[in-house]
Image 1: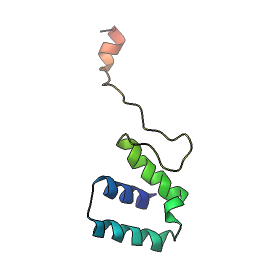
Image 2: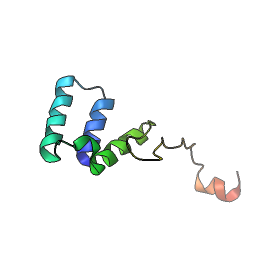
Image 3: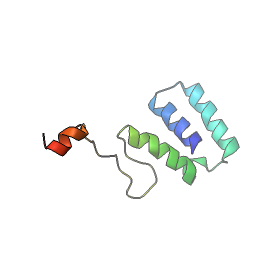
Image 4: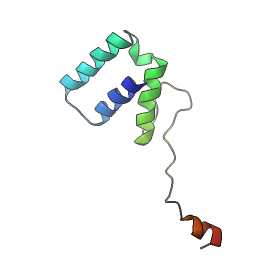
Length: 81
């Protein structure tokens, strides 16, 4: 999962092609040739994508997280202000 997070964060962060290729090689070594469709890798990549409001990859029903407004302080919620 951590490699998926690392890879997707690098893609979103627009790192150099060289750096991204290095991460891909690490993924191939540790996960195997099918790393792009590995469940753990996808889970990590999707966590990063959701954090950035992007649609998920390869998981049915995966969509961006809803935008949540600022939460009022507890005392305002209790007093209705």
